[in-house]
Image 1 (cartoon, rainbow, N blue to C red):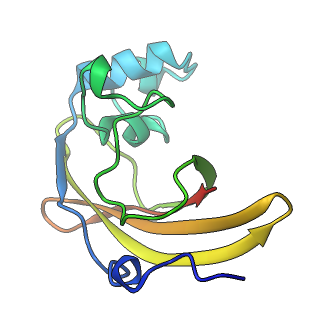
Image 2: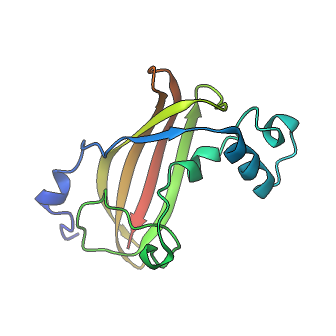
Length: 151
C-alpha cells in the first residue's frame, strides 16, 4: 500500500481545535425537541436536552454559499489529505450527565489518529477525532469518538 498520509498530516495527531463555547437555553431545547419529534415532556418543556442535542448545537452557523455538497460547513480542523470525499465512519458517545437550560458548555475536539487502509474499491483514510464536552466549571458532560472516512 502506498503512503497517502504525509508527515505534515501526521503532525496534526494530538492537535486540539479551538474550544467551542455554547450556552444552552430552554428555547433551543424546545425547538430541537419539536423538530426531532421528541415525546417526553422533559424535552418538550425544555427542562432537559435530548441526547443528540449537542450534535447541532456545536456546529457553526454558516451561509448557504459556504456549505459543502453534504450540507455541512467546511471543516477547517483537518490536515490536507489526498483523498477528498468524506463519509461518516461512526461515533461512540459516553454521556456523563444530562444537559439543562443555563448550562455553559465548552467543547474541545482533538485529532486522535489517521489510519490508511485498503478498501475493496481503493485506498481509504480513517480520520479519528475525540470530542470532550465539559461545563465551564470543568464537570464532564460528554466524551465522543468520531470517525470519518476519506476516499
